[in-house]
Image (tube, one colour):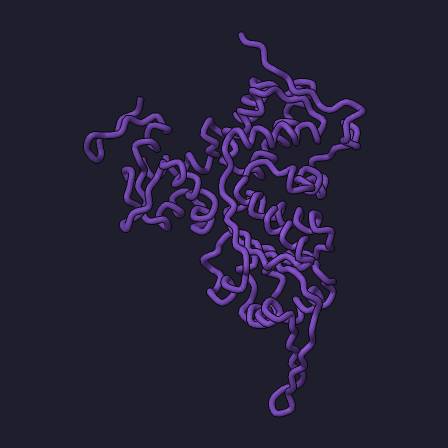
Length: 353
């Protein structure tokens, strides 16, 4: 059996301050500690990184605030990471809020008035802002002007207040839900896409060092290929496998240890979880492979429809295991093969291997 190459944790001279026992994966600051602190430290997303570097360099040369930036893409791909890195690169303060928290203009006003010259205001899930807040933010983004209405009816009057030029960075997983007027007010728009396995392998290796855990190259690759092309999932799997290795393998993560840990979590070689396989099995056994409506599938697997559409189906669609048709969901031949079913020559003739 080939010997695995082990990547050891850093020595005492390395720049990872916490001792081995001091890294708590349940620490609420774990994301911050694993997240890259500089643009040069970001793995993958080279097109996005190169464009951001141009924007940063241009802002520095002109000594102006960065143009408003919209980051869109699926969850867990690093939109927040980029939003946190940019203020550090520019040396400015960063204010953070979230779309669901902004139900009225008064909720956004303190963030705007507290933003200093060139500061960054990061609004996560910006598509969930209320329409009133969206209307309020238009003059802020265009003219750095706040319009405040005092009083009601005939006695109402509007006060215009100028604020220091600053940058709004919005992040969204559903850019299609943004209205055109809001979307067009972002000077820069960048799409964050899924990661390659080798990029995830590098991320896992780096974060294992930060967590002061030993992991082999083969184990890092195994985690990467089951991470559904998403760094957040890769970090979650690494955290779980670290716990498993601590109890079962004296803290050393080899390929065998990683496979055993992922088997306990019911994560297969494609990265499918139990609910993904349950979805495929129900589609075959109950609906004959489809077509079937998503509501009918949801009732059969006892999973809410929005959970199916947001968490289960996207990865199955990306792998080509199911298809969405006008008549409903249909399992593909690849989906049947993954379940161990011989694709039928005619409907209704599928057989188990």
